[in-house]
Structure formats: structure tokens, C-alpha cells
Amino acid sequence: MPELPEVETVMRGLKPRLEGVTIKDVVVRQDRLRWPIQRHLAQYLENQTIASLSRRAKYLLLSMQSGTLIIHLGMTGSLKIVSDTTPPIKHDHVDIILNNAGILRYNDPRRFGAIFWTDQTPSLHPLLSKLGPEPLEPNFSHTYLLKALQNRRKSIKECIMDNHVVVGVGNIYAAEALFMAKIHPQRSACTLTPSECNLLVQSITTVLKAAIKQGGSTIKDFTNSEGKPGYFAQELQVYGRDSLPCRLCHHTLQAIKQGQRSTVFCPLCQQ
DNA sequence: ACTTCGACCTGTTGGC
DNA sequence: TGCCAACAGGTCGAAG
Image 1 (cartoon, chains in turn blue, brown, cyan):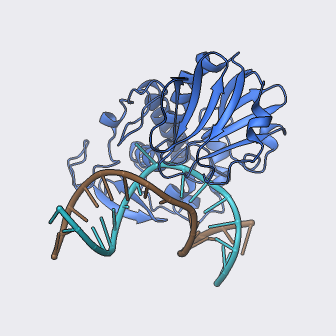
Image 2 (cartoon, chains in turn blue, brown, orange):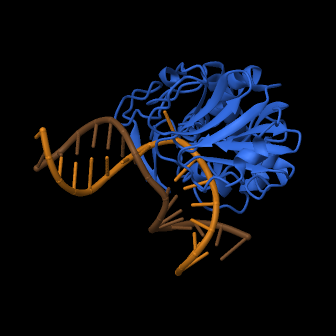
């Protein structure tokens, strides 16, 4: 479900409703997520007040006095706040019960997501410590990208989806950014010129910012924490448009496989 | 140190 | 209608 814009949208929606709120209890109905939920999660969280919400890559960080709750939505995870009388539905795996008659409820049909507690500084946690730069921060520059790609022979699309290179760019926005930059998705990453790197950095940031502005892309079932869809899907140029005409040149868009993921691109616009 | 590929899951869709 | 294969917004970690 979520790439960076979707996670950012969820984070912004939850922020005003969770900051300053204290956790009363945790109910786990299904502990087999990507990793089993820690046995003592409820004890870690009990009586902790949520000081702030933030995002690193596609991880949501809920900081508290003695540590941080880290949530990843995987492919199909979602979070919403419901009243404490709302009965759970299918795939409602975890409830974080709040002291204000609300519940932060985690639903995830495929269970590729993760919820875990750490008392380390989050950036030092093994899952976060090797992440590349945030695409919307100034350290994601064309000089950085050029250097990061200089020994990479695999395709540019696979590289920009690699969290060591840059975080938060998933299958949708990788395809969109490459289309905007007019770069062929199968180009070997180390062959990009400095000006192409510059263009690609601009394209990634432009696409992500536009998607955040629209509240993310609802492809199948993404909704924000209020249950509302995102509206960027209607602006997608290539993702999900295999065999349809390119919006720029009207040539038929083509789908290929890269690293077991589908890529749609325009063979004329992207050389 | 690089790349490739299987693994983790459920639900939907399309072909026969 | 049923059955089966393929596919879906992610990404870790083992194996080569």
C-alpha cells in the first residue's frame, strides 16, 4: 500500500491526534507480522506518553519517554484511530489503547508490516542504521546520487528503489520519476551522466512532493488515517498504464519485469 | 561487496 | 461456478 507519500500522509493525519496522548494498554490479536510482535510490547508501552510522531523512510516513529515504537505498513498495512467501542474487523491485528477513549488500530491483510519497540536511538536500530538519505532532504543531491551510483551496474530503476541509495521510492514513484526524467528504466545506473542525475533527483522530489500534496496514491485500497483515499492516482503517467498511450507522445506504453517487479515505461520518451 | 532469488502472507483478477 | 496461476503499493536475508 504505502510508499513515502502514503506513509507521510498517514503520519500527518495521526500526529495531531496522538501527540501528548498516553497509552493505556496493547491488545495483539495476531502476532505473526513480518517479525513476531515482541512478547512484552504491552509492558513497554503501558503508561508511555507519545511525545512526537515522525517518519524515517517508510517507518513511522512514535517517540516516548523511554523509547520508540516503530511501525512499518508493509504492502497492505493501515492505521486508524477508532473509538474504544468499535469492534475489530478481519485483519485488525493490533490495538494500541489510548487513555482518551480511542484506539490506534493496525490492520494488515498480508502481514508484511512490522511493529516493534526499541529503547535505542531509532537511527541506530539495525533496520534503520543503513538507510540512505531522505529524498526530500537537501543531502539527496545530484552530486550525492552520482557518487552513489558510480559502481552500480544494475538498472537505475532497481537502484532508486534500493534503500541504501535513497529511501521511500517504491515501485509506483520509481516508474513515475524515471518517466519524468525521460530515463530508460533498464539503463545501467553507473552510466547516468551528472545532468541526468540532476534531472532524476529533481524528478523524484517533484513526484513525491506532488503525491504528498494529493494525499498519496490510492491504487486499490490506500486510505489515510481518516479513511479517505489519496488523489495522486489520476496523475500517474506510467504506473498501471501498460498498453495505454503515453500521455506525452501517444506511443504505446510497455511493461517489463525488473527484479520481480513490473515496470511500465514509454519506449519513445525514455531512451 | 555485489547481485539474485526465495521467503513472508492474503486477496483479487483473469483464463479455461 | 470452480479451480489455478499470476499478480499486487515492501524488503529482508540466504545463497551464489
